[in-house]
Structure formats: structure tokens, C-alpha cells
Amino acid sequence: MSLLTIEERRAPARKGWAPFALGFRPFFLGAGAAALVLMALWLLWLRGTLAPPAWRYAPVLWHAHEMLFGFGAAVIAGFLLTAARNWTGLPTPQGTPLALLFGLWFLGRIAFLLPGLPAALVLALDLAFLPAVAVALARPIVRTKQARNYAFPLILGALTVAAALMDLQMLGYTQATAAAGVALAVYLIVLMMVMMGGRVIPFFTDARVGGQTRRWQVVEWLAPASVAAVAGGVLLAPHSLYTTLAATAAAGINLLRLAGWQRRALWQVPLLWVLHLGYAWIVLGFALTALAAAGRVPVSLALHAYTVGAIGGLTLGMMARVSLGHSGRPLVPAPVMTAAFVAVNAAALLRVILPLLWPAAYGAALLLGGLAWLFAFAVFLAVYFPILLRPRLDGKPG
Image (cartoon, helix red, strand yellow):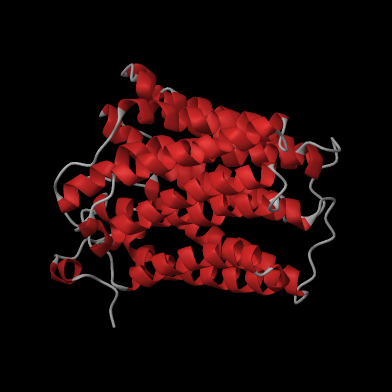
């Protein structure tokens, strides 16, 4: 059965390709491919089916690094470079400049896989990408003096610091900086999701199901502030009463925020409920962080609630929606994408909840969760590969 929509089959044929017409196209393709390749390699190494290369760094660090700065950074770049054009009305990189940015991201990925490259070159290739995106993003934002969006280039700069902390240990320059790099990166990405989620999730919900979601100004201010408060505790005093209380407060604040966005009708719309569930994983991540700070659960459960559940679910949902809207297609994904949305949440449940309830099933949880993740992003690539490569259906630029 064809994965094309009725509108696509009826539309007149558009000749040519448009992989670098707008930021979401190459980076969403790269993110989808990275989600598959990185997870497949990780599962093969865990199962002993494939021996990891004789690297100077541990495969577990490579896995964490690449899921954050390979997969995650690609989604962030694609989304922000696309959104900035809408925010400012000014162009963002396309064509050759966009291809060069994508090439920089790709070089950073393969640098870690190629044996024999000097450590300094690997470091330079990996750290060049995020500052380049930050500059490309800052130009239209600063020119239009959009103060509310100044934070995003700054967050990209802070993410570069997090990547450097990981890289320096992975490449043998330091002994104990990677854990701080992972925590800093995760909470910076959570901060970005909380900021953008507060803008787009209620907006999309109102636009699709009608009515008006409830938003309280004090909660809107406290939600991102709570992320910063938890991040500070995790980085400076991970097992303290302060971190327990900060994470508990963050869970409550963001749960209240999410509750205000609820409409019964949204649960009939896959492009909406996948975003709401993604935000719910942030809430659960804060709750698990509080329990981890109190010594009740492993820190890794909170970490994977943020990464597999929140980052996986929200990015898959946003990539599915943005790719349709910015390619001139109706906001109705192929039916099989509903299975992908279910699968990415199942991956999080298997990776986080199953070990919590049944610690002896940890190995099975890793494997089954990884397979569910692979299914979700394989479906995404199968559906969206032609959409992301072809010109817009309506003939408009982008």
C-alpha cells in the first residue's frame, strides 16, 4: 500500500529534488538515520553480536554522546533553522550554506568512528557544528531584535560546552568531565523542550480541537526556571535535599502546566497526543530525579525518561508535523505513523518503567526498548524520506 496521501497522489508532479531547501529537510533526514544507526550499533554491541572498535573511549560514552549530539542536535538544528524563518521573516541557510552545515554535522559523526584520526581533529570536527548553527540562528533573531528568542543561540553555545566536557574525557584529555557533560546537555535540551513546548503544544491543541487551553503566567515563568533549578542541583549536589525538593517542585509545576493544556478531543489526534505524552515524560523525569536524589531509584531511569521518552517522543511528533506543514501537505500523517508514536512511547516504558518495576528484567528492557525505538524511526524514515527530499506540493519555496 502506498504511503502517499490522497492529496499527494492528486497533486501535479513536481520535478527535481529539494533536500537543502530549508533546514528541517536535511537535518530531519539525518536525525532519522542517526536514530536507526546509533541504536542498532548500540544493541549489537550490548548483545555481543558485533565487537565495538578498539577506541580510546568507552562505547557507553559514545552512545550517550551520539544520541545527544548526533540525533538530538540534528533535530534541534532542523527545527530552529526552520522556525527562525517564521519568527523573523528573514531567510535562514538554504542551498549550499545549508549543505555545508549538514556536512559539518555529518563529519562530526564519522570522526568518532574512524580509527587513527588525531584526537585534536576529532574534537575540532565535533565542536564546530553547534556554534555554526548558533551563528546562523542568531543573525535573523538579532537583526529583528526578538529578545524572546535570544535564549536559543545561547543554549546552543552552552550545549557546545557540554559536548566539550564529554569529548575531553572521551579523547583522553580529562579524567572525569563526561558525567557533567551528559547532565548539562540533557537539562539544556529539556529546557529547550519546556520553552518550545509551552509555545507550540497549547497552540497546536487550540488550533486543532478548538477552545482555549488554560495558561497561568506564573506557571509559564516557573516552568523553565524549574528546569534551571533542577539542573543546578544535579550538577552541584545530585544527592541532596535541595535537588530532591527542586525536582519535586519541577514535577508539580510542569504537571500543572500540562494539565491546563488538556482537552478530551486531543486524544483522538495522533499529532497532538504524541506531543502531550512527550511533555508528560518530562514531568516523570523530574519525579524520578527527585527519587534518585533521595537514593530511591537509579539516576539512569530519570535520564532515560528525559531522553527516550521526552526527547524521543517530542522530536518524533514535531518532525512529523513540521515536515508536513513546511512541505505544503495537510497536517494528517500517514496512518502508520500512529504505530510509530505508540512505539516510541513503548520504548520509553520498556526502558524506564520495566526496570523500575522488575529490576531483573533490565537486559530484556534494553533490548525490547531498543527494538521499539528502531521500529518507530524506521517508520518515520519510510514515510518521510520522499517528503523531505521532494519540493513542496504547493510550489512555494522551502
